[in-house]
Length: 273
Image (cartoon, rainbow, N blue to C red):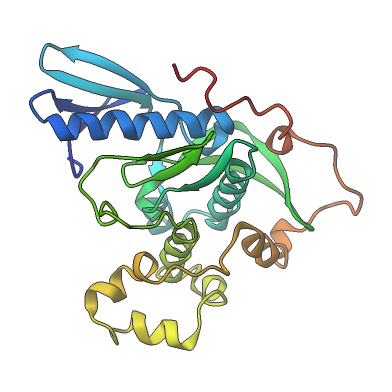
């Protein structure tokens, strides 16, 4: 059960469903799926593909591939290299934002429960670069963003927002992309295995707020209230590059792998009609 609708899954697919009688929720579901599909078309590894379908005479659904587990569960199980998710998500955000037709995109709810992984058969060597910072690592997991119900986006001159009743859905609320990685790094800050890495992105004043200076609610949801403009995909890559796991194995730039091919990104409006 989500903030609206219910989610049903089998071994391969998940369906988020709402009743037609829930008019606003149905519109929210379609607008969420629309934004997610645009992001998927621009850079497929960023988020799963979606398809809107009629389930029965009173039910509308959005179908997407089922993923294995979210980041919270992955870290709770003590699985290795949780920062691989950060690398992949930061790169995905950079790829989408760098597209010529995208003016702005923000998920605005990028906590550990909205980042999920699927196993890569045989594993994959990932080589990715933002600015002057290249990363190179082997992984068994592909990480993707789900649940775009609080997202906002400017694409091809159009301003898109979902119609869900949520924290940011008030007139005059600005679409701030810096919320995303602030919320995600706060997730890492709360986990013992990644706390030391994440702490470099926050100040002593931030720590005071997280310890309750401005109230418990703002402490728990720090990234939503205090998004930090200096937590960018490039800043994340600069920090990850210092870790031995992510240092490139060769000094010369590698040939463009699957995750670096920007030139072939289709127009975000292709395939969305």
